[in-house]
Length: 168
Image 1 (cartoon, rainbow, N blue to C red):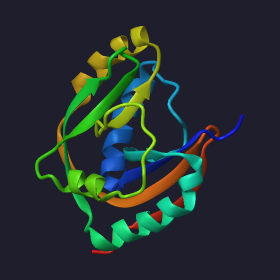
Image 2: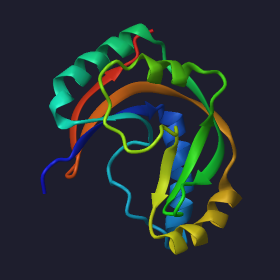
Image 3: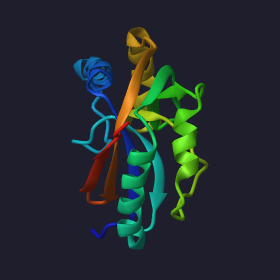
Image 4: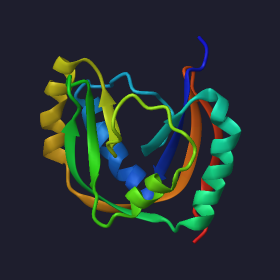
């Protein structure tokens, strides 16, 4: 299977990883595993790019982490995308720090959908996600975390390319 695209991801801090992992573990205990990409940290996808942009995106990722501080995120709600296959937690967009980083990306993106900042908890068929939703609702509590680094990956198969931590 050949790689198809690049994704620049905003990785959440260790405490946020612990909280999100706890929610996912509650789903697993009830028999829900999902088909989301294993082994990646919980993150918010910032942008997708064509494969030929790899070096350009690495350079820009380093510029962004030099230019911006760590980004506070208030994970305030959960939701599903149309079709019901993706269950996610999502940040409140005030303050607009995350949006400012997204807008600062100069490299041409290759995206099929409007950007919706979210952190995927589980991907599965719609009927399974609908059954998992009450479990997540029962365990969900909003929290404030922070984005501490950017992470570039190629997909399918998953190839981790580079990471850069925010320096300010």
